[in-house]
Length: 390
Ligand SMILES: Cc1cc2nc3c(=O)[nH]c(=O)nc-3n(C[C@H](O)[C@H](O)[C@H](O)COP(=O)(O)OP(=O)(O)OC[C@H]3O[C@@H](n4cnc5c(N)ncnc54)[C@H](O)[C@@H]3O)c2cc1C
Image 1 (cartoon, rainbow, N blue to C red):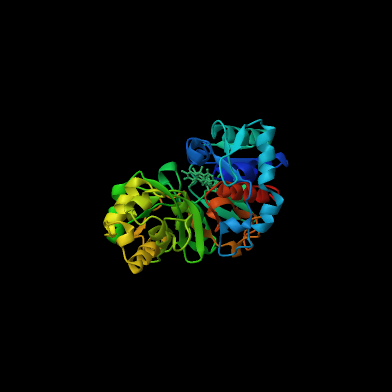
Image 2: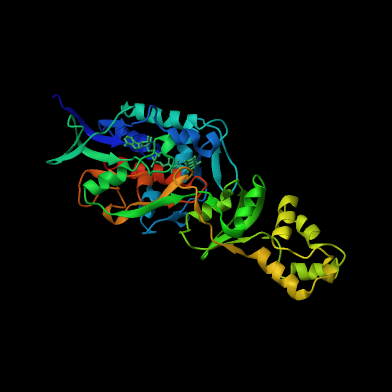
């Protein structure tokens, strides 16, 4: 059987794999980039509602979750959000800041994929789509893919299992197991919650959104919460889902702009108004009506409601506590938390310490960012770190 020879084979032509291939190729390495999908960068194409939130102006290690919160520092210092913005500008791709430092293409995510593919062709990278990896073997100081492709190094850039419909797999974990590398238990993240118990009836508000502060333990996010036909979603909920584990409670402050004793003060200032009327000044009408019905808030004018009851109502609205009964799982999760234990990798190069020549990059690794362009920034930075070392 004829053996093809490369300096490096990269499995997974998503965000991290494309970046890594381009960087290594431009450094003169003979690179083969393969993907089982029929086209490269599929998740980039659907990201950010088709406009790709490609990075965040404020990206720093603080917005990432990992068993080792320091692991990403080295890669981020070598390839920052400004380096990626510089590349986007070099390709004259128009972009804008939507909110909270989140940068999106003005046009289409296709421009980001086209840019990365062009960078790969500048590096003379060979790209093969519809490529099925059947086997990986270590042979002396080289790696053998499907018994007929030999390479000095091998990069696993196959992401995590979120959104299997897009071709996501747990391939990286299988390879990790093959080489005796530890995995931090993966779970879906940036994912909507499903509701049970008293809160199940919130699903009748499907389509209603409101600005909240949602907390789990010591972590809080202030953004929109969206009621869905299965539970709750929206940026605030997706963010907190990454910090939540089964059985834990979350707390929602439905009135984040109001101070303690707001309702008691209203009793003094506006005694002839009902609580539902007051609430609908700060919440969507549907939600105000619903909360008042669900919790049987008094319907008379607030002037006739005892102070103790008002304090109870206020406490409930400021800290509505409940346990989600689950999440919508990998089917709906934007990312996977956990993955390749960073202890196994060099933080400078992403190379496996005890398996020279083997690298893991991107979402496959136990580094997960907040919503808002942070996950792509990790994919670019980890891809760059490996690409510079291959
Ligand atoms: C709907 C959605 C929207 C998102 N929007 C954003 C956003 O706007 N901003 C942001 O920062 N992040 C966003 N993310 C997260 C972001 O897409 C990922 O974090 C990022 O793509 C991870 O990059 P990666 O290269 O590690 O993995 P991926 O981009 O997932 O690439 C992995 C590649 O490996 C291939 N592959 C998998 N298994 C195999 C196998 N066995 N053999 C060969 N190839 C294989 C896949 O086909 C894929 O091309 C979004 C995610 C989703 C699901």
